[in-house]
Image (cartoon, rainbow, N blue to C red; front, side, top):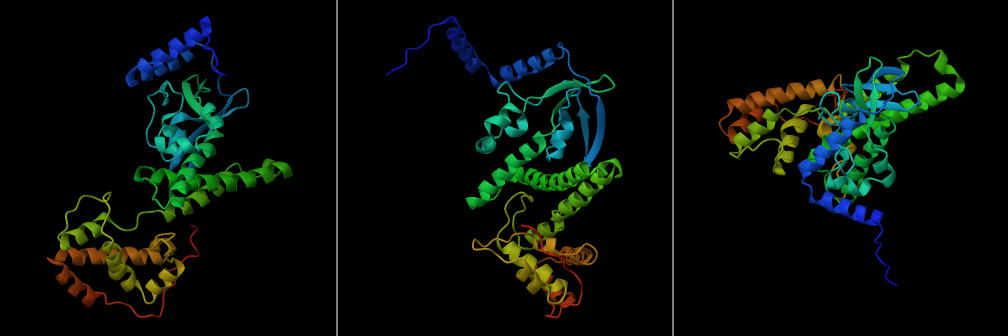
Length: 347
C-alpha cells in the first residue's frame, strides 16, 4: 500500500531545505560550510589540558587532550600523517564540505569503504590550545580508521587485478606503514600499562619503537633508480620522453634486468628472481632492490647505476652504449661473493 506523503510544516521545511541545497553551486556550499565553521568559534570551545608532539616518519604530529579526555591530532598534522600534503588555512580552515566528509575521504573511489559510523565521526573538533590559540583537530582514533579506508581500496584493486590509482599510491604506502607501526607501539603500551612498567620506562621509548619500524618501512619504498636512467634509455632508443608518470614500455623492465641486475654481482639476478618470483599474473610482490642490504647491496646498486648512466651519456646510439657496457661491465657468473641480501620482504 502506498504511503501518503506528509503535509506537515516540518516535512515541508525539510523538502524545501533539500531543494535549496540541490540548487546551490559547489562554491556556495563550500562558503556555507566555511561560515558554519567560523560560527562555531562564537560558542564556547574547550581548551587543551595537555599537548605534545611525536614523529611519524618525517612528519611531526601535534597532539592534544581535552578536558573530557578526547585525544586530538591537529588537522594539518593529521593530513601529513596519512601522506596528504594539503594544509588548511591558518586558524579556522576546515577541509570539509557541506556534505560533511573531510576532503581526504571525498574521492568516489573511497566511497565503498567508508562506513556510516566513520562518516559520522569525522566532524572536525574546534578547540583552543593551551596558549589560547584557536585550532582544529580530529579525534586521534580516526587515524587508523582513515588509513584502513585506503588499505581497503588497495585490497579491492588487487582482488580485481588492477593497480592502485597512481594518485593514491603514496598515501596507501604511508597508511600501511603507519598502521603497522601504531599496532606495534600499541601492544607495547598496553603491556606497559597493565604491568605498571609505564611508570619507569623512558618517555621516549614508544617513540623510538615507532621510529625504528617506520624508518625501515619507508626505506623499503625509497627511490633507488634515478629518473635519468630511464630518460637515457628513451633517448638511446629514440623514444619520446613524456615523464616518469607515463607508463613505460614493458621492454624497459627487461633492459633493467640486463643492464643492472645481471651485471651487479655474481649470481645476484638468479637469487633475486628466486626470492622475488612472479605470480600467476606475471607481477612480483616487491621491487628487486627491496631485497638488497643497506650496508652493501644499496651502495653497490647506486655505484653501478651512476657508472651505467655515465656510459649512456657518452653514447650516441643504443648499440654503442651496449658495446661499451659489455666491455666495462660484462654479465657476471653464478658464484655470489657479496652479502647483498636482506631477509624476506613483506608483501
